[in-house]
Length: 263
Image (cartoon, rainbow, N blue to C red; front, side, top):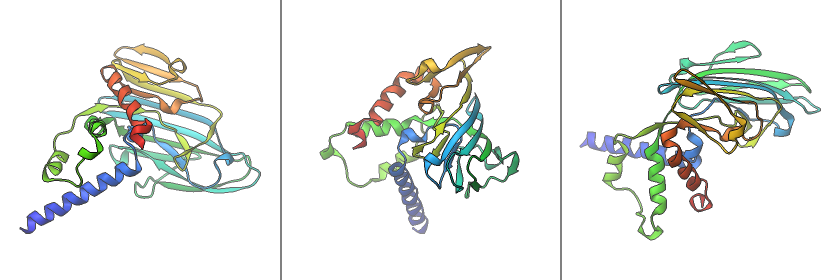
């Protein structure tokens, strides 16, 4: 009996965490992506990314990624701030390496931050390398879309035993990789970019989904291909995935970003 109660409590705790995650992070925002630098203090207008170099190579279910940015204080006074290193789905903590102004610092997954002060016109350089997983749960999206199609009066309140069972069924995964904002204020407000160099190497069955397809140049080498871009406009929306998943992904994103789904 005690074992049953303990298991039930554990399941409820897991479910609570899953639900809280969906409340604060829409599924489309949790796609595997480049590491990101999130500025936590100071006005976003104070900062400008003078250089940004992002590279990734996707092989199998892993992505070897690197992101190097130079952030300048373009304000008239000194700014005290901190940067949070956001790394989704790292294969391990040891696979994340961070340098600041060329000096290696430790990466702590529980406290992934670095405080700094910038005088006017002063620049700080962050360099982050990470090996991350690119498998993404397709079932979580399909479930959200299926729930959206139900009439409100037919929706059940609360959860039954079979709901818990389905949580532990084998999920279906697909490979996804998103460029992401790379640098932002609080993960929400954009920061101006002066220069961007992006390079994404993927298997030859991958394609890029973006409204700015003309900004990406494609080259093929053997059984892989590389996409490159130096556009500073709308690069964060680019997603790379197998061509067979392209149409389903586009339709899913249309629904997930629609006013009907969000409200």
